[in-house]
Image 1 (cartoon, rainbow, N blue to C red):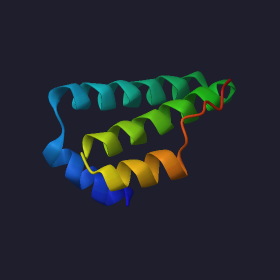
Image 2 (cartoon, one colour):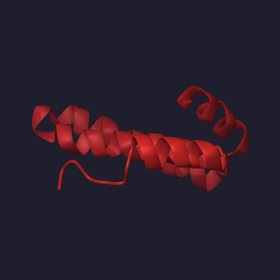
Image 3 (cartoon, rainbow, N blue to C red):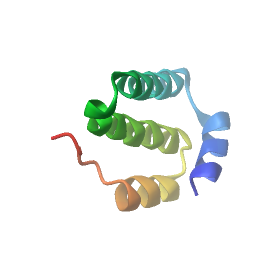
Image 4 (cartoon, helix red, strand yellow):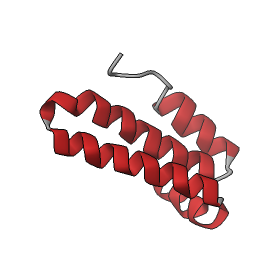
Length: 78
């Protein structure tokens, strides 16, 4: 599902979507560089990254399935 959502997002995304995706990717990289103590932040950023890609697909089914069922919007670092 995520691969198809990514393919759709590549076509349907807006410039704002792309900035949001890139921002979450940068957050993932920063948390990874900080090391194991930042694992929770990295996981939060990864969830946000995939959520942003899925939302950029403009496919309501994928958003519901991936975002609402697989990755509920809860923080692991809280």
